[in-house]
Length: 597
Image 1 (cartoon, rainbow, N blue to C red):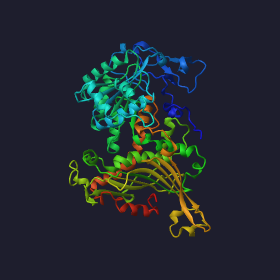
Image 2 (image 1 turned 60 degrees about the vertical axis):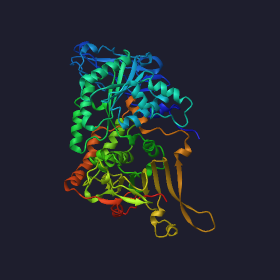
Image 3 (image 1 turned 180 degrees about the vertical axis):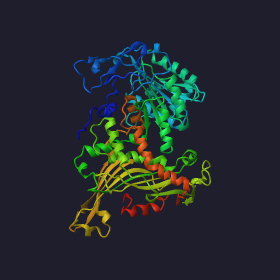
Image 4 (image 1 turned 30 degrees about the horizontal axis):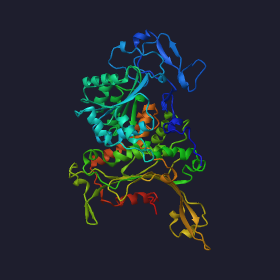
């Protein structure tokens, strides 16, 4: 069967979503759909301001460059003050004399480079996810010809020690191993290290000098990935923006969750970030939005006629978002105890997926159009109350002669901790499409299995002639669409059909798209997609500040009540299906949690 794709190249998989600021790389042929300038010298401009035209198509007065690159002409606007800060770039503390990059530049002429700095390079996230994702992009020819990767952390190690550390976590895809060793060696030669404090401007000045050495006078585009604890985000951003931002290209910063603990702390973090960055320079990453099946959610809905007409209260009875892990904190409880399962999973991962699922059809695939629709969903939702929430915490249990620890047995967790390791909630969207439809969330640790999935349970067929063939369990007569995000990615639809034979016996069967059976290629890790999007300036899978505000507004009152009243969670055995209260919550809305039979 022929596949629909804008290009056969891996890197072009997201090209349908390219926005006006994207810089794309494909087989080392580059094009710019809109030039971006981070800093232009006030001295160079005099008393005039430059306005860059940003049309989606080349116009007759465009300056055409090699291989399809287009540079827009600049319009001079009289009597305007000098520009201090332009979109997608920062003016650093450096003198205006540094800003002498010409108005137009051609990336096809070896004048552009990308420098990626992983701040917190010695941490687990960097070693296990970020560096392997960057290598995968390099292997697939998704990175530009001129790029370098710097690790930055407090640990005093050499370039060789960083490369040795990184090499232990690099792997090639199962279907692409023929020159794996050679590619790894080439990639590691692009990796360097600089030791410094996260709050030291002097150390970031030293980093800036090293970056310039490797950029070799080219237009420098710089991406900083903050793989560090949230309490030092602002220090690192301040130092990077003042001492190490690009003076003639773009500067972007990827920020890892958590984005605060509640509405107040999140807003304070955003205000602090915006002292040094513009909103479109901040890439708040939620790696679940980069997962293949979450990416496919809008494709499934908006490109298949059979689904979109059914996507409303008229046909859907309830929607379930389920996240479960079959292990506990096990030595990593120090971080978790400060946040809990609601902040760690529900307020970000599951709520973001819910917003994508429930949004109206966006005007286009542009990042802002998609994020606008997600914000509308979040603002239409009822604030959560304790009446619609169940919390739990796992306790010790013995199975098969093996004793599994309780949450509070973790040495990094206080013995009297009431932090939930499980939560279930019923949420509602008060708009015309979803009025009255319960959206159920369930997330927990130390449960009986590991999975993340979306389950859409449809209404009963009115006057169904075959109800008697299903006995008294009418739920068996309803259709269910399951989107399994992990593991074993799949999309399947439960339907009713007749069992072959002379009698009239009905059965439930799955129309199943199992990815590993249908597609031979290994599915890219979520961090690969998100890193590539950040390099390209594609923002649709990153969280905008107003999205964040709306998400925290839903959960903050609940979290405040839980902590002020020190509500005791329901205890459930390690390896079980979770608290019994979760089943009472679903029964309250005449819903049964979906399970595979």
